[in-house]
Amino acid sequence: MNTIEEVTQFLENDSELKRLLKDVASLELPDWWICAGYVRSKIWDDVHGYPTPTATEDVDVIYFDPSHNDEAIEKEYEAQLHALSPTVPWSVKNQARMHLVNQLPPYKSATDALAHFPETVTAIGVSLDSNERLIVAAPYGVDDIIELRLRPTPAFADGSPHHHIYQARIQNKNWQAIWPKLQEVDVTRNGL
Image (cartoon, rainbow, N blue to C red; front, top):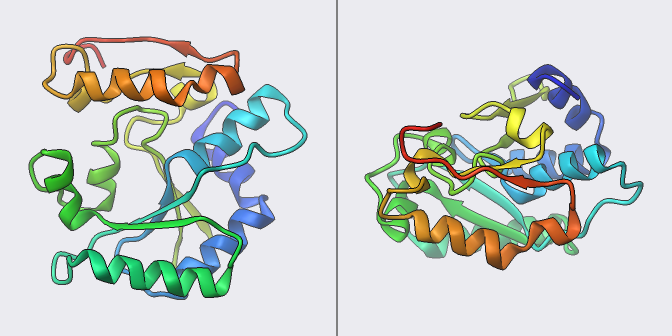
């Protein structure tokens, strides 16, 4: 894999991902995406040549609905998804409220929220278009994911008030124990 088109094709061919995307699509959420670690790990497993997918802590689903931003609604969506796929560890978050949790300015959309995830490699989402074709959102492209570079997004870069969150995540997640070819590239706020 070298391009976003190749990443899209790779993910399009993943039958488990396609099934989960259809589950989420059935909820008819506005501006929804399966994102972050679940998607990133599939790519890292492939680049590392792993024949079996790495187990995931959760399947992150984000959406953007400023008219209904009660956390209880997210739990209802998780329950609906659990009814469709009971063995999947679903995590559903409305990004219209998550800026408060993350102490950032309000997001404009789910993809804007992706751009404010701590790492560029986590800022990736997949969804289905109206023809059920897989689409990829990657605000920072896919080079870092493919080339196995760990780097903060601008909101979490060195010199930002949130850089410590990025640093703690890199240490606590310990991704390099699972994917040893990963390389950390820390940059200043203006270096991305």
